[in-house]
Image 1 (spheres, rainbow, N blue to C red):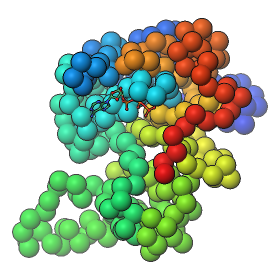
Image 2 (cartoon, protein in one colour; image 1 turned 90 degrees about the vertical axis):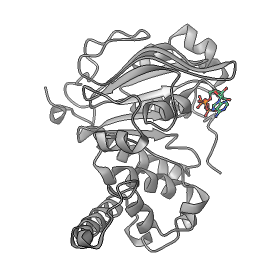
Image 3 (cartoon, helix red, strand yellow; image 1 turned 90 degrees about the horizontal axis):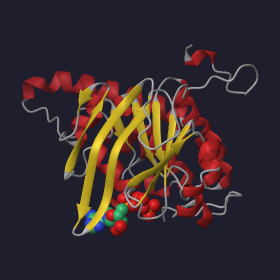
Length: 293
Ligand SMILES: Nc1ncnc2c1ncn2[C@@H]1O[C@H](COP(=O)(O)OP(=O)(O)OP(=O)(O)O)[C@@H](O)[C@H]1O
């Protein structure tokens, strides 16, 4: 069955994107896009990440949750080539990508969002988008003889950036400094920028942090649309309403290890997760989230 047959409104037959997956740590998936084994990272004497086996099912929204300091960001950084592992290997779309740089991982089709740094806030929204384009980070085109190619590439990048800004309702802001955007608009820009390379998997770092409730629905809509277009979404988030509402699958980290995996209903009732994480949360919905400012 294809994702086209999914009835997002909930009417009709619900399609289980996780069919056959057993809710347990290291659970094997029927169509994994990412498979990681023995991923370990320590800082001094502290083991930040120690993931024995993790598979992410293609075409799903998978949440990575856990208490502060559980290792979520470190795992994101490792998998996307922005930090170096002590041990471990992982493959994306069947290709080994451990040891690759962030740029190479992005070219392979796996991108992560980054919160706007100070430097980026002083650039326009459009220039932020162009920075996310292929050919901008590391692929330097030297030599005047390449200028015509370069010009064509720049033009194509600008067209793509404008299309994405339109889609994310930021088109009117394209000449504004990114620093003037609201928290929610910044999140939209981070997501739009990550899409400049046409990834098959997008990793979102706390997409709801610092977002005004009015924009939450719009962000949720964009995330589910990406999944419904066939992309795989892996996201780190603290807002339990968001996590339970949109995730097909949830992976729970505590002290660097995967302590549970499952559908939202499995996770909600998992005593180990309640003890390690949910017990400290207001499960009625208040985010423990850190906010981005
Ligand atoms: N560069 C670093 N140097 C030393 N320790 C680090 C470094 N990066 C992370 N750590 C430690 O590794 C552990 C995991 O941190 P990490 O930021 O990955 O957790 P997290 O689950 O993303 O937390 P949060 O939800 O608060 O963002 C923490 O104890 C943290 O202090």
